[in-house]
Length: 172
Image (cartoon, rainbow, N blue to C red; front, side):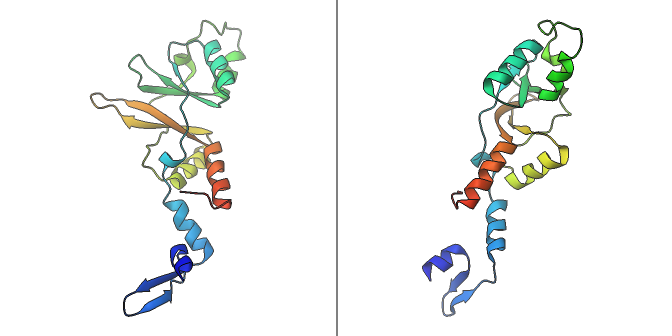
């Protein structure tokens, strides 16, 4: 009885006893997924300065094995995002990659989609699908400013990790 109660199939009330909650496996799994926040599956952000060259960004992306770099300004606040496609587009021209700053080719704020640690991961997964992007910066508001500090990232790989944990019944 205790196992069924902890699993959510049964509930217990004084003077009533145990009773069936009516929840199926799908309902219980759905509730579990909807309660998981981004904070539980975030990973370390990979950032570059907006003055860095496109060549440096390509090198960083390769060495860190990521698909998206978050671009920060001199105050370390989020100013944009650069993807593999952005870097590929920049490298197709006749320009020297060492002379083009990342700030020229990045997607700039306020056009950057981002999230916070307290956001639900299911909502962020929907954003990733809808906007057809690989990852989002996790940010927090800068206390005495108008920008955002990058504190992490959430990617399709993080979502896949959650899916594997759910299949193995290893989630939080």
